[in-house]
Image (tube, rainbow, N blue to C red; front, side):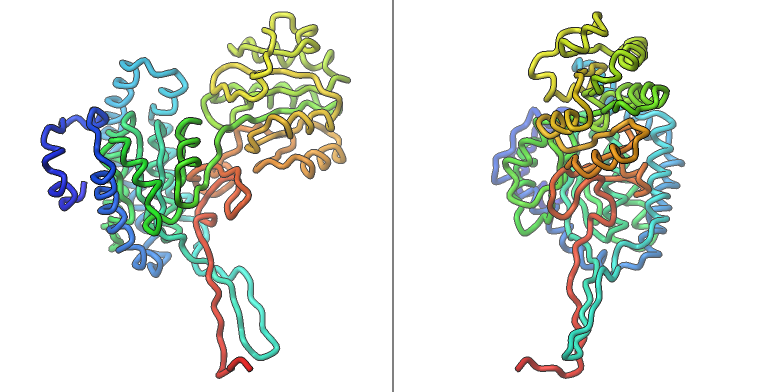
Amino acid sequence: MPPKAKDKIKGKMKHKTKDKMKDNAMTLSPSDAADLMASWTRRARAVKPVMAVSSETDRNNALMAAAMLIHQHHDEIINANTRDVKAAQAAEMKAAFIDRLTLDHDRIEAMAKGLEDIAALPDPLGRVLDQWDRPNGLDISRVATPLGVLGVIYEARPNVTIDAAGLAVKSGNAVILRGGSSSIHTATVLAGLMRDGLIQHGLPADCVQLVDNTDRALVGAMLAATGAIDVIIPRGGKSLVERVQNDARVPVFAHLEGICHVYIDADADLDKARAISLNAKMRRVGICGAAETLLVDRAVAAEMLPAIAEDLMAAGCALRGDADSRALIPSADAAEDGDWSTEYLDAIISVRLVDGVKGAMAHIERYSSAHTETIITENTATAETFLTGVDSAIVMVNASTQFADGGEFGMGAEIGISTGRMHARGPVGADQLTSFKYVVRGNGQVRP
C-alpha cells in the first residue's frame, strides 16, 4: 500500500490483521477507497510516459528477467499458493474454483514460458498500421501507441498476475492488478517478481502494481476511476463480470460467460468428433473455453452420438439431453430450458439434436455467449457456412474449443477473451492493448 495512503486512513486501518486473507472483514468508506485507488493510479500515470518511450530491448529484457526469477523462486511461489489453496479448501470453495487457484510445477513453468514467449513477439509499439500521401503533399500515418493505464480485476487465477503484467510491459502500458482475497499470497509473490525484473533493467517498478488490500470497496473505486484508468479488464465469474459491465465508468474488455458449442455435422469424421468432443468438455471443465453444449446433426445422431456420449460418461461427464438425444442415450438426464444458456464450469454438458448446420447456427445464435464455437465436418462448404454465419469472437473447424486461449494463438499469453465488438475481440494480447495516433508530416502546408 502506498505510504501516503496508509497515513491518510491510519485511524480506520489500525486494527487491520497482518493476514491479508482477512482484509475483507474491514469496510473502507467510498472516500477512503477512492483515496487509496488514487494513490495507485497517480503512480501508474506517472510512469506511463516512461513506458511509452521505453525501448523494445529493455521491455523484453525485463520480461526475460522476470521469467528467470519465476524459475528461481519456484518453492516460494508454491508455498504461497499452498496457503491460498488451503484457505479455499477450508472455505469449501467449489472444485473448479480450487482448480483455477492451484499452481503446480507445470503451471509455474508455463507462466515463465509465457513471459519468454511474450518477449519473443514483435514490438507492438510504433507499428505503422496505415500510411498514405495527400495531394497537397501531407504524409499521414496511423501508428500504434500504448493504451495507457490498465485495470485488471480477477479472482482465483494467479497466472493472471503474470499474464496481465507481462502483456502490459510488452505493450508499454502500466497496469494495476486487483486480485481476489483467495489468491492474494500467490499474487503478492508473483507481482513482486515482475517488479524485480523491471528494476533489473531500468524500467519503473510502478508500471506493475498489485492492490494489496482486498477490501471490495476498492473494486468500486477502480470502476469509477475515470481519467485515471483507461480500460478495465475483468477475469472471473459471472457475478464479477456483470458488476464490472454494469458499474464501470471506464471502457471494459470482457466476456460475461463462455457458453461454447461443439457441432457434429452430418459429414463429420467419427474419430475426430469423439476426440474433439471429449477434449472440448473434459480437458479442463472450469475454463471459459470448455464446451457446454453438444449439438449433433439429426441425420447422423444414431451413428455418432452413442459413441461420443459413452466417451464423455466414461470420463465422468453428466449429460443433459433433449427428448430426441435421450432416445439414443437413455442414461442422460432431461435437459431443462435453462440448460441451453448455462455455463456449467463442471463435468456437465447439454446435448441437442439439430437439423443440419442451419439448425446448429440457429441454436448458437439464440443461446451462445459469443465466445467460441466449433464445427466438426469434412465438408468444406459446410465449414465455410458455419465460419461465415456464426458471429462469435472465435469460430473453429475440427478443433477443440479449449484452444480459445491467447497462448495457443501464439500471443504468448492473454489478459482475457473479449466478446465485445469494439476495439478488441477474442484473445486480448499485446497488440490488442494498443491504441493509435495519427502522425502527419508536412513541408509548410497551410489550409486554404
